[in-house]
Every structure is written in structure tokens, then in C-alpha cells.
Length: 503
Image (tube, rainbow, N blue to C red; front, side, top):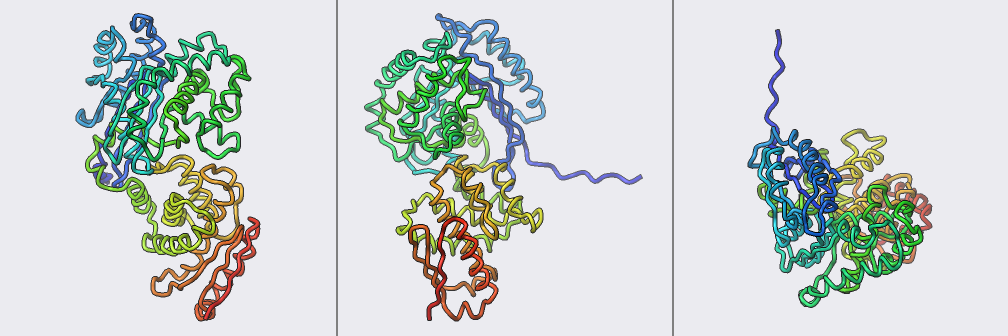
């Protein structure tokens, strides 16, 4: 009788559980090709904060919901080494005077100890979650609006410089200002005023510290981003956009009738108070714009559990992992990237391209052949699916959608619908990036470094002129033919491409 060979041991699992004020989360992951692979995620809306009374006593019903949720989590923890597990509790269990009653039974249910972390520790872990998973300007303000607290952190690299946790959250503010479900101007005014009063104690310190970019990680900020995308707007969180969304919410009059384009059902119960807190942050701290970041407290705790996760650039770690897992020809990927980088630098001023776009373009070059592992004919379609569903630490959702638009249009026929699905930048700028990528792919057709042509490219409004050596054109008739076809293909975008020769 033949026996099946025993497979080699897989990488060990790591688990992080976050007992939040609104939801309990469990994140299980392992390291694959030096990048984090999420194995399982579980989220339960426990709404623990809604069980706090005026004396900060948790009621029996909210505790029962929490224990029931943890009994589900316990099943997944039993096969994970205890040293690879971390369980943290945040604002509500900091506030609850009877928290020990909850914790004693919760630890018994889980079979693991629970650490109630301070507000400052929570803020620092949230910051680490962003630092490990998001590429941005080095000095950043991170905002997280939770169920019972709001965390604000200014940091650089992996180090937080200024962190605080404020006693205001979307669940507690819902109870205080929107308890009857009425969505009125007066309710928003009162909630915003109270939030500004709380924020005023921190205003001077944060403005003195300063930041280059503001990043948001909570459900409220994600919901706003989803609304903007759903309503066909660029995914930029500004005060004007927030005020416009507030008016849409008020127009619904009551929580039972809250129905605005882009707002998911599960986010409706505490969206209004979260929005009020966010508006207050913009007003009091004079924030001009917030970008959505990946990661939060769970990722911060997880990445600190994993070995050597501070030593590699976040985005590069993600790209290297995908290149390895999907057997991408790395040498050729970066050959295309070098040509694209050359072209980008030549037209950057002509097309007013921001430096941040260069990084997205380089990533698209690195991954443009990711679909080839499955098969050639529909490789673009396969690539779109992989990028849409892969874990992309270092890329926001808006950046992911721009990547899909670029990779899904890197050669042959254009899929203009992908342009409309991305909201990271305006459509014309996305077309400029597609043109650069497509030309880089064509010019590198021979997949050899020593035959790369010197070229010049000049950008014009909705157009470009590409100059190539006459000798290169004559000795590469197939590339010449593809460039002629490209002139016709790219005209579908109302883009005029001219190809000329030089001596």
C-alpha cells in the first residue's frame, strides 16, 4: 500500500485580537515570501461601548455579546502557539469600572490573557499599523475614530512623536447626540461643538508638531471615501466634501431613512456621529485633506510580533512577495520600469505629474505581467483580478484601483471603464500614466538590456511626441509596427501620439 508523502511544515501562524468599542476583530496571518499573508479575518459588531451607563458600568447584555464573540475566536486560537498570539482591549474596557468582571470570563473563554492598553499605547499601535502598511510622506498625522475614543498621532518612520487618545467616539457620540435617530443640523452642531472643545486642549501641541500628510484609518473615514467613490468623485477627503456629505445625511432626516449613494448598510448606525467628529478634527486642527491609509491597531500589533518587519520598505516588500509568488520575470519588470521612469521624468513638468504618481507607475511596471502565470491570452484580465484581491500592504484602496487601471491597459485594446473606477487621480492624468506604461512595454519588447533605445518624449495637452533613432526603427520593424498601431489605439482616449525619428 502506497503512502502519501508528508508535506513540509508551513510557516507558523500569528494571531491578533482587538477588543474594540464598536467591533471585535481577529486577524490571523503568516509570512510568505517575506510578506504578510492574511489567513483569516473575523469581525463582529459587538458594540461594547453602547453598554456603558452614566456610571461607566458595562451592562450584562453587552458583556454577553462580547463573551459569545470570543467563544468563536477561541476555536481558531487553539492551534496557534501562545507566544504568537496577542489580545488587546481598548477604550471601552479602559473606561468600564466593572471591566474585571468582563475580563475574567473573557480570558477563561479565550484561554489567553488580555491586555487593556492605555490610550497612548493604542494610539502608538495604530500609528505602527499605518507605518507598516502605508507609503506616504515621512511626517504624518494619523487619525482613528473608534467607538469610544479618537486617536491622533504625529510620527515619522516607525516612531510616534506625539500621541493622544480622546474620550469621544462614534458609539458614545451617537448615544449623546443622535440617540433618537434624528439627523438634524442642531444635532450635528452640538456634536461638532463638543468634539472641538475636546480637541482644543490638543490643538497647540499638534499644530506646533506639524505634519506633511494626514492619514485616516477608521470605519468612518473609510465610509466617507466609499461615498466619494460611489458618487463619482476623486477620493480626497476635504472639509468641503465632508460638509456636502453632512447635508446629504441631514436631508434623510432620520437614521431609518439614511440612504445616500456609496454608504454601506453596516456603516449607517454610527456614521453621523463619526462624521461630526471628523468635521471637528478638520476645523479645530485646520486639516486641509486626509488620505485613506491601510492598517490600524491590529496590523500594528501583528507586524511588531513578526520578525524583522522594520527592515524592508513596505511597498518594495509587497512587490517582491508578489514577484516571487507569481513567478514574474523580475529583470524584465524593472527593465520596463527603467524606461517608464525615464519617460516620466521627461514629461513630468509638461503634464504636471506629482512625484507620488511615479511610485504607482513603477509598481504597475513591476506587476504588469502578473497574469502570465495563469495563461497568456487573458493575462490582463487575470492581472486585474489578482491585483483587486491580493493583499497590497503599502497601497491604499484608491492606489490599488489606479494600479488596476494601469495594468489592465498596459497593451493592446484599451478598457476605458477601468479609468472610471479609479478615484486616485483625474482621468486625464491616469491616461498620461497609461501612455507611459504602454510605450515602455513596447520599447522593451526584445527583453534585452543592451538593445534599449535612447529616446526623447515631449508632452502636450492630451498628446505627446516620441522621438526614436532612425537606426532603431529600421532594425526593429515589429516594434515600429506596434508603435504605429499604438498611435491608433491610444487615440480612443482622445490622446494624440506622434512618433518621429532622429539621426
